[in-house]
Length: 316
Image (cartoon, rainbow, N blue to C red; front, top):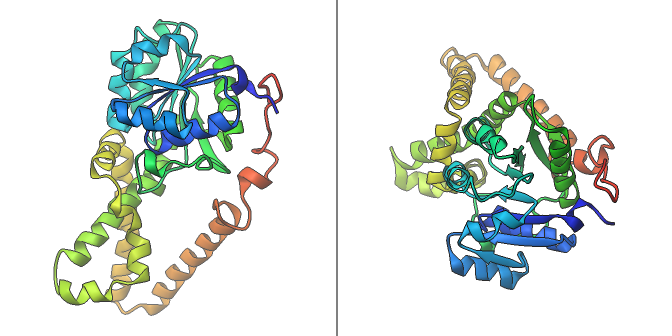
């Protein structure tokens, strides 16, 4: 089925896991043109060879003036500087979006300067990715049946906002609009905090005490709980930096819950321990069955509110 993508020229900035995966999917969908921008010429060639992009260049000025939409898929630390350094290169009337997990910082930094040049910035955050990185981990189905948050602001152009929706839907995402502050707070509590607690678990278990014995004792629970501690330290440091107030609040809330367990253990209050564990088990089971990507019900696939496809004109 034709979508807005068949007549849209797209530039992907950053050809790592998220950027290259997006390119692969866009090419599957028959996007008019997919261009790539990356600092590494070898990565650009790899993306061309893999069929993720039609053409790429390390010089953004060779690509940005010719495209209708630019998707920033760089690490957070590079996203804002890239836009600021290339402000004069974006085509008038084009749309810029991104895939970062923090929205407030980038919107505050680039939305108004871009708008002054006649360019629309609409923040996006597809809930994809893993502890892996780089083009070698790219997959055309990375975005399939995944939520993509779009974070509109009060004065956004309605047509530009709709085009961003119509971009992500055929890629495979169900699109949910969410206020910027709510988005950053939710991601701090459900993602950013968990990277810190996973790292803290590794450091507390393997950084002190009888490490020799614990190395043998670490099994499935340790592996599952700490998987994301293998993520890129630089990336997650930048996440904490850009979303510091929300991350701090999430840490404080987590400490409060952990303190309840500590107090119950100190008081040998096993009834309270059992009740808190039971509440957690019930809540997780409901989340997994109703909202998890691989649970029994996938809202992107099963909920008519989210799985609408755009028509041939790109309208939902």
